[in-house]
Image (tube, rainbow, N blue to C red; front, side):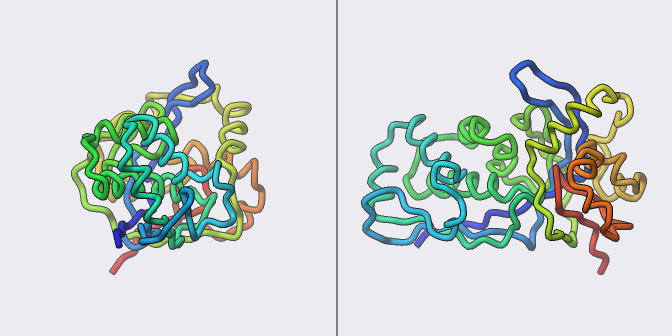
Length: 259
């Protein structure tokens, strides 16, 4: 049996830098791996008539990022070994990362799947090639492909530069509110895009995460999507989140867990 951990991430900061005609926003963000929160992806021996995933029954197969990754790998490589492998193995997902929570669970699952397929089927693909394939599926996937503890991510998410620091010990709080990323971005685009100021976060990409969180303690300043999420999901304002920071498009909050 083959197994791999698919870790969650948080965004230490997230700043929108622009908008492209293709319909996507560009950004710069510090992604950090959450060491103690992860899904598990396993390839379990099983005679399968078709590609089979267990543990994600609430997600239609065509919408599942793991299935999209499977299709993308097949299309890119044309490697018959991938098809044959999944006639004799099923994918079993043990979910721990909450969905629509700003923690990258779906993207992390897809990236971990791709990394495990590369190992299991002896694919002759570099990490860079795997990340390029992943970028066509989801903006966060390249970060998870590289599997850095911390990285500066820019562009549409496809530009990933490791940042030399260990992953911080983090405490995660996820309320019973699910945030639709597309809706949060639409709110930002409609009401807040005009306020983008690239000078307001100059030098943040060179500052270590602990220092940055100690220096700038306002989650609205650190994450451009937080005001958009508050406007889209007003129930977020009712939460007692003093001392917490907002991750991605939400709805999760995080803070450094002090020993």
